[in-house]
Length: 367
Image (tube, rainbow, N blue to C red):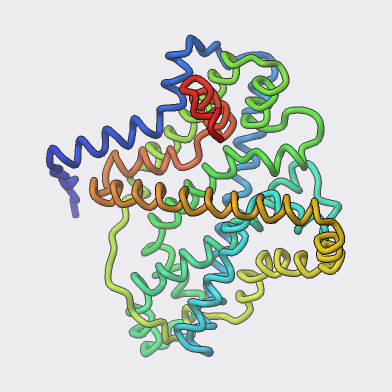
């Protein structure tokens, strides 16, 4: 059967909103251009080695996260069947705690229990642990939306779990899994904290190399060229997977059959969150005693907490407004691919560019 592409009609207001969002996303790069920073060629002696390592660790990290995340999804589905849908969703929320916590906090939690993690293996494992819960929760939702109703029929017909997985689950969710893979790949590709800590003194990934060129060498031109290479690579991946990431949505159904459930997967989904929580209960009284014994530290901590709270609330409001605009534009087609490819721009370029904007406009003098 031939499937002709569906033409997406958008209003003038939607195109205008999309233009504003693209301008907002690209504003750090645009400001650097206006400031006179011209990107230099990123293809230098060490770039090929660093870029190859970046692609390898991102691909393996995403693949491992997908494999373990699907297994974790079976565990969360089993929790819904055994403990009720609300309790199952609550466990799904617990599973995504590593994605909510600061990356450095989760990294320190992992190293507390697994201090031997270093190099390529360590980067892959930490990236996978960081994203397992998110993948598990996402795939569990896909189970409800797309295959739960099919599982009821297959269970009546006596289909085995393995046969159902390869004959129904994989063909049905293939496009969605490619989308999740591209998302996790982009996050791992642009990761800074994990490869910076676990990769040693040399530049291991493109983002770390960008950080070294700008922070240590003061070479914005080289860093900007590398940022363009990084962004172009992720956008190329999403457009190459264009046909494989076109998905459709259906209404949710209740997961009721064992074909989509296995309690063996529940520890996989919850293990990263358990590492994070366990690290917080490691001798907590030490920090508490320091807080009560030192008035200066207590005052700084309170001010820091209030400042962090204000920043978090303001950031949440801004992100919510942008997401509403994205939903208004209707994220499908090429617009969807752009959003997927721009999910993880260079944090180094963005951070230094915003800092320069703040200084140039004088806003920094008030904060």
